[in-house]
Length: 188
Ligand SMILES: Nc1nc2c(ncn2[C@@H]2O[C@H](COP(=O)(O)OP(=O)(O)OP(=O)(O)O)[C@@H](O)[C@H]2O)c(=O)[nH]1
Ligand SMILES: [Zn+2]
Image (cartoon, rainbow, N blue to C red; front, side, top):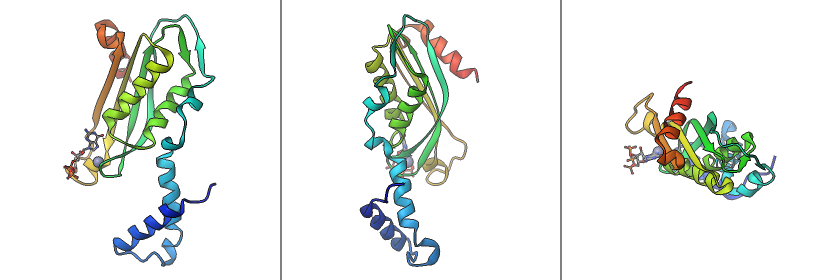
């Protein structure tokens, strides 16, 4: 595994000191390096190129029925508090001559989740990249997450969840497509 980023390591050493801990005690000696590597992983989306995910996984196919990948587990970091929010994404689209490898839909979710986010923007970014890459007839993304900034701190509402959606093209405009998406994702 790559070495930890030295600036991040020293920032975490500072955090340990500032919360009243002793970074020299045995249990914490490697903690700044471990935390730096963990933070690098939580934000790995910044270093990825979306084209590496998309390239080679888009195929010509004359199918115009809705495709849905649901219950894609995601973990992200709230940009306001740097604490996790996590849950599931449901992604659907209606092709318009092109389809994408199914695993790439989960990789797209991962790409945009692994950075500092708000749930609304995450939802929209996933929908917009699919629309752009596939020139879809319609796209729908629904995300349900628990925000730890609302459960383990702040308002402390354990069990509350936030649902966001972004619908584009015919799924936004056509009542039947929208209902089809909603009924398929709710049926789990
Ligand atoms: N819309 C949106 N808000 C979020 C998201 N994640 C966290 N927040 C909210 O961001 C807001 C930040 O509000 P502030 O009043 O500046 O922060 P705060 O004093 O820590 O607020 P509390 O969480 O209410 O204690 C809070 O209401 C959070 O619930 C998100 O993904 N989307
Ligand atoms: Zn937050």
